[in-house]
Image (cartoon, rainbow, N blue to C red):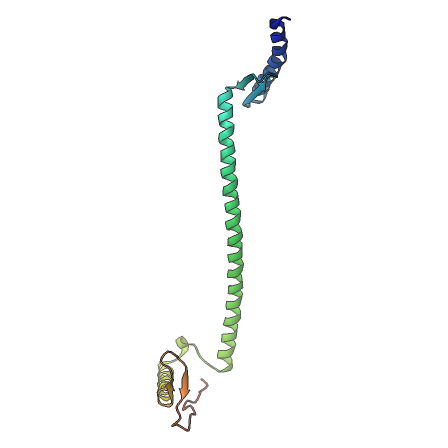
Length: 169
């Protein structure tokens, strides 16, 4: 058996594969690497422009893809959280509109003016009514427990009617 003939016979298909890889790299302007193993485990390498550069470039690309995919998943997670917060903000805006409308209706029904719209005389009258109400609370209610903010009527007072008269303005 001629070892040289066996070696050449084995090298021909490998050389054809390397030539086709080189032609593909040139034709499509891409980097190509080929790693082939003989039946006895001998490695054969081909790379265009260089096997080591192509392998390193692809290894770095895989790391970038993993990093990019983890960044992408973080972005998606934060986007979902932002969407939930934005929905909550929209619900709160709607709730604010309902509360504002209810306040306006209550103020209109009881003929209550905004502070900015009241005259000085009306403000002074309101201040006097608040002072009278506080005086009434201090005279007619006592705090039962220092830790509690709950007021209880005192037993020695019989008439607990409020001295305030609500005026319509």
